[in-house]
Amino acid sequence: MNQTSDRDFLKRASKTAGSDSDDVHDTVQGILNDIEQGGEAAARRYAEKFDQYEGNLLLTADEIAAAADRVSPRLKQDIAFAYDNVKRFAEAQRASMADLDMQVLPGFTLGQKCVPCGAAGCYVPGGRYSHVASAIMTVTTAKVAGVGHIVACSPPRAGQGVNDAIVYAAHLCGADAILAMGGVQGVAAMTFGLFGLPKADILVGPGNQFVAEAKRILYGRVGIDMFAGPTDSLILADASADAEVVAVDLVSQAEHGYNSPVWLVTDNRSLAERVIARVPELIADLPETNRVNAEAAWRDYAEVILCKDRESMAATSDEYAPEHLTVQAEDLDWWLERLSCYGSLFLGEETTVSYGDKASGTNHVLPTSRAATYSGGLSVHKFMKVVTWQRATRDASKPVAEATARISRLEGMEGHARAADIRLKKYFPDEQFDLQG
Image (cartoon, rainbow, N blue to C red; front, top):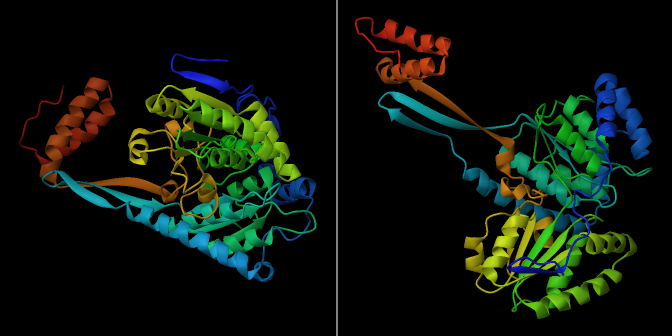
């Protein structure tokens, strides 16, 4: 058993999210280069090759309406429910951002403006799982932010096209266009502005390793929500937690993928041992595809850590900086105040990561691979540019010009200094200034 001074590993991962050595960079770079040079024709070739799809790539209004007709009334209600929660939370976030102005000196005004991006590309996975919720999370948030043009891009299935519920959700949430294209080719089409679409200013949404690598390569040319790795989840649980609920929650997140880490951190050995015994039984009861993923994730990437007390538990959690963090322990207010590194926090047994993933209202596009140490998840803020401005009277500019000239000369930037000098000479020709620093 591995241990440190205040924690024991009752189960230790044999791999980490970075253990997968498959290098996809060259493949992705080659596809991006081909599509940038070859344009729409190249994108179509890749769509036919990887998506095995030769249908209409940019969905028409009639196709969107037909897809909506095929969605059941109950599912439409559920999508509307999730959409309303996500929309209202995003609107509250947007209201927290405000234009402002202030006088730093009498007559010298500084300000900020919150300006939405002009165009956004929202990638919605539709391969192994049809991520209807991702359409809601990305498109709704962009719309509330005020983005001028929103493209929802999702991979079609051979002979079927884009999942009907994804089409319905993207349209309901405000997508201006729906692109039936997956993978790197879909990301490239949005970035390069193919098929009559505006070039995306920002790309958001989850995807496989090829999508994630394409976004990483393109970052700088376009904004992205974050560098994404495999999804990960951590549960903090004390003696008051229900071992069955903890085990089910761990399995629910392990099914994301073979390399999706799940971690249990507890100060109660009995709870830990019960969860360790129960998880394989729960995994065995999953449908085959889900079971294969969860078995590998639990076997290779999961950890169960026994800590001496709740402070050690919290410190361990902050060190791991999980994408999803659940607390099933007493004194939830203490945990809310103490914890600082996570993508989204789920306090108490009465909520779960699955709620946030699908319908409760917080966004499920979140930082992975310890990125929660420095970044939050997708929100209206990701689609907004906070820009600044300034204006001054001539009298108010005097002390700023003097300080600017002296600081600039100290730094050896004479051109900067002279931009301040000329204003002092023009506005105050009868005054003498010490501008040498």
